[in-house]
Image 1: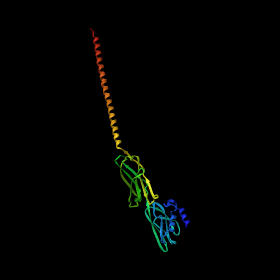
Image 2: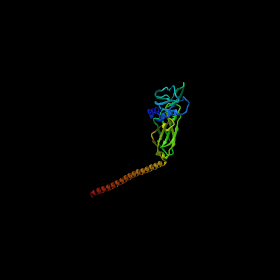
Image 3: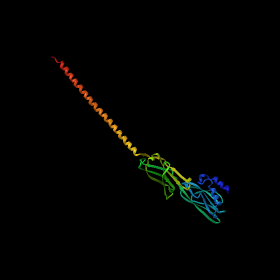
Image 4: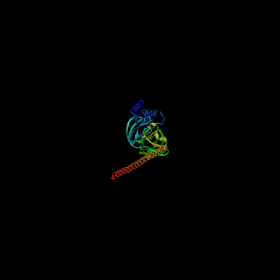
Length: 290
């Protein structure tokens, strides 16, 4: 029996089971030594989750010493991988929706069975984040939107807004169908001075079972928020006012210089004209005969 358990462990790859290589042998050893009424049927793993369109392995076993027959009933495609007198291991393929499978064994002419539920999930492929507006004054509010286009089951999803590495807001969801759907989170927040020094992001977590190894995590691209302080606005107003005054004085001085220059030129030209006329008259008077 030990050699059979070890060969089953070597045959099973770690990717096929969340319980690791020794999960199946441990389950079968527990079956042999744990108390229970003769003829009980067990299923391993007890909780089955699979990605849409994926496959999984199921082990049906019994504590009956000499079962007459046994197997598994399902509408999905299945293959018997390996078997022994008291257990059978199946591979099930192309699982596209939630379903229930049945493991059964006949012991002393009486059939015993156990149902196992299979949950199909659609993992979040991407997480999108939007800041609106992208720049804001300290003390004013802004909106953070986070959404996952398609995910299932919705009740297993949690969206968490992050400011830097610290959680800012968390939201869970309630689902009524296994069909993949959109999940969206909207949160309003008042801008603070330190917000301009941190990235904002959104973390999506799909918790398929209890245990951290069965949580699918994906994070959005980080985004920055431009923060303006009221003091910065006052300084800008002062700078604009000073530049405007200096520009006005410069233009005024240029105009005054131009006007005064024209007047000086006209006065100088007028004085020279009178002197020239006086010289002509004097020459004409001297040229007359006596």
